[in-house]
Each structure stands twice: as structure tokens, then as C-alpha cells.
Image (tube, rainbow, N blue to C red; front, top):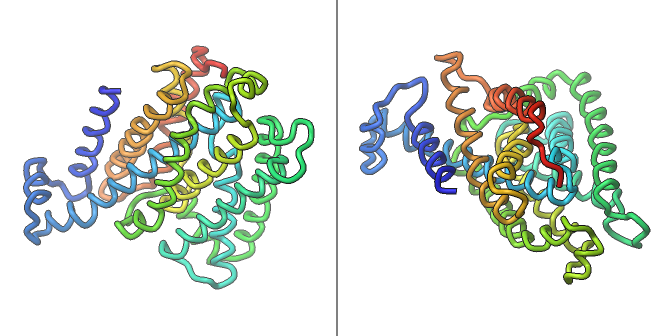
Length: 327
């Protein structure tokens, strides 16, 4: 935990220093403590500082959502995308542009969050998590099947809309790559309450998810109500992943790899996995964002692209070494 916390501090410091406009670390410290209105002060305090804060929030939310999804589905390869979060957010963003409700970051944040929430709720209902309970309703297998089905259907509609509308295509192709560039305090304030509520719920579910990991019957014997835990887990994942996607667009591999690495380091106790994921997720996003600023300098690329390029080989290496432990 201490090493992960140290990595997070170093990643935050690097995020404040690294960029197309080179500023010495000592100067960054000076303008942080005493803003003086110079170009360096504006760049650090008005651009890099809020960008770093958004990256930390997004990384923590995606990683914690992934940890809950993996514990809930008892699948170490699960991530928030199983709930159709990304697909729902993507469709809502495209619909907003096509129907003329506006474009740009201010609009896409709310459209993305609304789409993610509706998709998450739809998957929950389709999996049988509400209404009359039947045998197997709300089970991890039904949840995964419902999520894949909803995601495929929403992705098909999104593709059809994008191909039929040039403006939607232009808006979507930048949003879907995932980026924290240009995100300010307004974005963090908008999604922050949702991320905070989702985080509190997710952390509070730790003991219950630990009990359910031993089997549903064992969990019931320990006083856990599986249906209630699943509903609250889906609520937490929807708030966390939906808020993160609304703020930065889809960023892959963070929700999958961060909890997987955390589990490899601290074992299967979901409480410890969740806390360590909260530290590793932001490190992943911040490192990817720093690389995104310099890899094709002076231009920038999207953090989602770099996060995927980093995550893919790491994920393949972990799988080939048989380090993916079953839950």
C-alpha cells in the first residue's frame, strides 16, 4: 500500500511537470504555492492541476468499479464494460449530436452519464435483478450475458447513427478515444458527487462481497442478502464507471488491469483489493496521460489510446504467465 501511495504521489508530480510547455519542477512548486499570473502559473494552476485531479478521479473510479465487477461476477477478467456502461454512454453522446441537443464537452458529460446509467439499469433489469425473482435471476452468468447483449445492441445502433451523420461521426471519434485534455474543475465538480457516492457504496460492500465469494449459500448463512448486494454493487459500478466515462470518455484496461494487479499483490480480500485499486488506477491513467503529452510532441494524443497500448502487452504477459487467479 505504501509503495502504491508513493507511486501515486510521483505520478501526480510528473503530471504537473510534464507537457509540451517545459516548466522546471522547482518553478512548478513555486507557482503552486504562490500563483503569480505568469504563463507558467496559468499553465500549472489552470490547466495541469485540474487535469491531474480529473485523471486521479477517473483512474480511481474505473479501478474501483472494476474491482467490484470482478468480485460480483467472480470473474477476474470482468470490467465495467460488461454492464454496457461504455456502449450506453457512446450511444447517448451520438444521439445528443444527431438530435441537435448540442455538442462539446459541456453537453457530452451529461449525455454520457445519462446513457451509462440507463444502460446499467437496463442490464440489471434484463438479468432479472428486479421484480419477481426466478431461479438464477441476477446471477453472475445472467448478468454477464445481459451485459454483452445490451452492449452489442447499443453498439450496433451507435454505428448506424455515426455512419449516417457526419457531425456525429466527428464528435464521436474524438470522444470515444478517451482524454483528460481540457478537463477543468467544472467537469470534476459535475461528476464528483456521483463518484463519491459510488465509491462509498463500493467500499462499504467489501465484507458482503467477501462473503459471497465463498458461494451464495455460504453468504446467506453469514447473513448476506445476495439480491441486495448485487443491486448495490451495480449501483456503485454505474455511478463510478458512468461518471468516469462521462468525464473522460471510454478508457480501457484500467478497470480490468488495476484490480487484477491489486489482487496479485494483496490476495483475494476484496477490502484490500478495493483500496489498492484506488491507488493503482490513478497511477495507470496519470502515466498514460504523461506519455500522451510527449509521445508525439508538440502534439498530444488521447490518454485512452496510450492506456490501451500500455495495458494490452501487460495483460497478455500476465495471462501467458498464468497469473490470473480465479475468484
